[in-house]
Image (cartoon, rainbow, N blue to C red; front, top):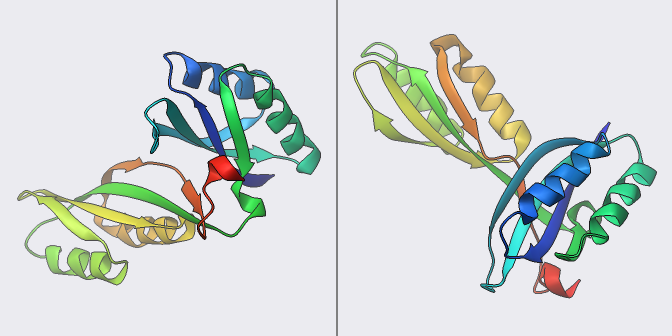
Length: 166
């Protein structure tokens, strides 16, 4: 299975995200991550989808099916253009006076920051690529990760041309 990052611009209407995700899941394709948010235009929502498919033929099928939805404006496979892919993770890790320094050092190595602390735990915020997020999670396992919240991949193309003009 190969993962692809799709930027899908849609009309900003209730239910569009449900239609998009439903279409992909009904076709038995796996959504690795999905996020939606406002764009620079109030009437347009951007849905970032990371989808796993066997081959490029299946990806073309997903894109073709999405393109048939009435509320879809544009679909761009960001894997085909030079792009920046990031993910945000919040990690709640068990901590005490003895382990806080080690946890802080790990967060610093990965350019993360502690955004909340209590006598029993800390919450660390880190952004980066999937491999970076996976690596920090692996490093913090020894301290007992209590909870993880990951956004999934979001991406932008490099350069001056926005997705809407691709």
